[in-house]
Picture (tube, rainbow, N blue to C red):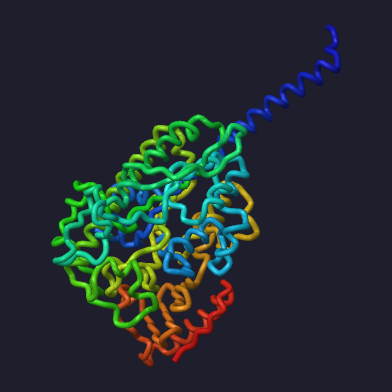
Length: 495
């Protein structure tokens, strides 16, 4: 029997090794998870049918909740200005606490950028609200980059009919008529590539389509093309302007919610009892002062309608994901930038520290995660950045402040925070635990203490109740500790 030349044996072994490496690499690439992030604007936590609000219809979000993990106590850390969404989103994409994010968003590695550098097909559509330069460096593709909000205007009179309503003098505006512009006629722009392959932000253009439908169409198109056909995993950031005002949606959705059938919040009052700071800014002027129950019912009915309409568009995206064949290897995350009052405590906006305004939904589903589970662990929205990094096997950038939720998702830890810090400009500071909340208003000396177990609607102020002195002092000490941790230098004190 002739001997096989040593060189041929070596070549054969190299070939076998190469085949093995190729199979291993293909398996490794295939196992890299995809991410679909669905982001609402101004959606309070108590706005999903199966979780906490039987009035609003959200069948697709209900399904996500049934198929994933719900964090029931998700919070936004605060804002340096009236546009709370800007600060929330700066923290989200930078992963930094508020007092660092304002500048850090301009020079640190951003969330989408981390996934782009890792070889992901990264895509964005919708509301960004943190300047063109940051979206440009974060994503490979972006379609219909939206404005922070779309104001309603009457085409002939040029007045803003969404303000100060409904009253006898201002009750002609309706949510379904495109004549009032707003969500119906968004001005948007895209990431475009020149002939040399360099990308930049293209010019603004107007679209005659509701924002929620437009962004869903863009997401579906991506899933049917790059998302489906690329060998690389995808990272999608789909950011709705809904349910931010003007709360517009098709008539069939508005008709689902007759105002007279809508419940008025238990903690409704005609006007907040004291000035919280900026208490009559733009958001609060959407309805006249003092509020009436009817005004609150109208605003809440339109709020529910645009949420249900957005839910429908989310359902279309989820169907396209299923049809792409990549759903089983995709983490789906749904949340919002913050909550909204919409009639609670005599307020309409989000420039306050009550739960309805600082707390939002958070649902995550995907490979290896539990199904239909609710976790009460306190968390910040902005922990999404490090959490997705760990789920993808990527290093978390050193500049990221917020902790990953992966240990909680895996059941290795029960919580990552024992208290939540909140702030609004120089007007408000807040600390919240599982059981209690302390809010301090340095500009006017007001303070509030709530027992959240007994009073979840935050209606009974216990600040002068001697039985709660120990709780008050413990919360104040914790507030000072958290201020130092997040870099807040505002001096606060108790009376």
